[in-house]
Each structure stands twice: as C-alpha cells, then as structure tokens.
Length: 95
Image (tube, rainbow, N blue to C red):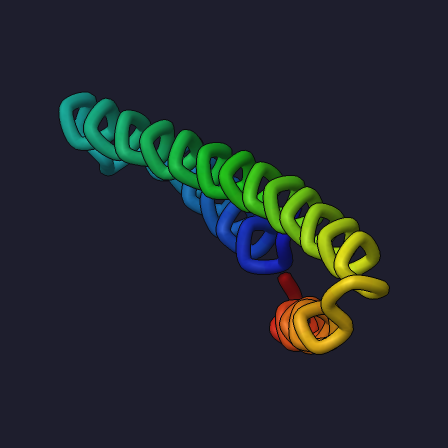
C-alpha cells in the first residue's frame, strides 16, 4: 500500500470517528457520508490493485526486454545495446 493510500485511509478513519461522535448529523446526511466513505475506500482499493498489477506488468516487460537483448547480443549487438539502454531508462523511471 502506498503512502498516499495510507494517509487517505487515516483521514477516512478520522471522518468515520467524527461521524460516530457527532450527534448533530442527521440520518440522511450520515447515510450519505457513510456511502461516500465506502466509495472512497473502494477507489483506494482499486488504485492499490491497479498499482500492483502495473508493477507486475512492468517487471514482466523488463524481463522480456532483457531476454530479447541477450538473444540479440551476438547477432545484433547494436540492437542489444539499445534495448539495454531502454531497460535502464525504464528502471530510472521506476518502471
């Protein structure tokens, strides 16, 4: 889970606690806010899931690029070097 996700979850917990302790919030307002909190939680879960999936996809891509570079090293060294540079560039971007 990323730091922004953790911070958002902390804010949601804070909001939930405030809703529980405030008696002045009407039932309709409370239900609306509880629903919105649930939607935000779902979005955070989805964002975390997508982030993990993207990391796996990027790792797979980097692995496949590395394999291609290795296979081309003897027959096409300049392509292999370019692929290596591409892999390094992706790594520097955190991909």
